[in-house]
Image (tube, rainbow, N blue to C red):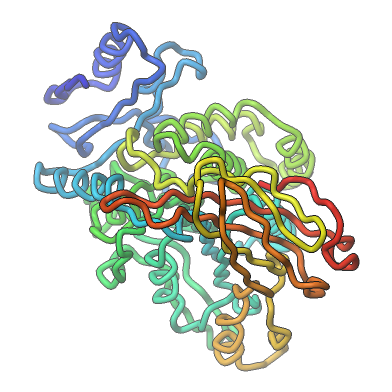
Length: 496
């Protein structure tokens, strides 16, 4: 580790040159990460400013956006980037408190299902005719990007959505979702430096409002019991770490307040100024994909891979671009899609320690299959232990058939209070069995429940020696109509 003190009133370019000199002198620069430990200010660590080239994002009169990204580039080429993160604190006491929280997470985060849960909280788009399309894209994104082995929780602060919580309690619900434990907490929607969007309902002349999440409400954040999430804030301005008193009442952004809170997320990835829906969608896809695929890596390495993937278009990217291109033309976006990708690589900041190790969900169950009414698999990392098997509905469905649909002039508060406890319960059947010599075979119900769509398994090592953490492994697969109709007697390909 090399300590490189920032010099008073040092320019960004000068600091970048000094950082590059240190990194290039190392024997293994590919395993290097940069931690900017300090706030922006006269005697702090400066940040770069880029011109905002998309007119639609100039709300509030901000012609530039902050970026630490150039510090991570060893050359002018993006593939040269190393991992980087910032802990934007002003005092030694604040720095030690944040770093102690991160250390506790790395050393003492408990085992459990929270490690393979992804929690989504979303606000309404308010993009008019494009809202329905965006919602469909989001549902498809969740189904395609989050494998069947992961649990998914959805909260959608839209009055006519079945995933809407009780309207007057939406902020309390968001705090509960933030603290209940998950590998990733992802907010999707509108945001600003001090919080995220507001839920609105009722006739225009009698419109009622409730905040979804304000930075000031973090004082009421319940204990997470050591199950800190990583937070991805795909919205505007919540990572505005260079904010000064001239920009508002509070200096700290929502992302900073989250990191500083002892029960808050252990790392936050957020935009430093107004973001674009297209750039948000691509960045969300890549960071989620990299987090799930490389959960044994550091947070900075996951973030670095996600940024590089923004320039490497796959089939899903090309499909998204084909869908977005007509919208871009119709609404007269000035920047190209390629330019928007680059802008969001620069604008999103990792607020946290890039060398932090993730609370990994564990190994993957291998050879997961269904045959002769049993689910079978191998767990090379666990010789003896137990396996829990869950059969679930599709993610846009739930067990209950009593979910109430929105109707004109109905009582939205009562409907939401009725629906919300039901909509994330997707478990149709739960079973358990033993692991012997790294293998398991567990009987399934025959026939499978009629709405069966997914199968998930979680393997847990038998109680380890005192002081050691039990090993875990997860697996999952999508169930087909053939599985259900055949009474689980057919072979199935391995899941993930």
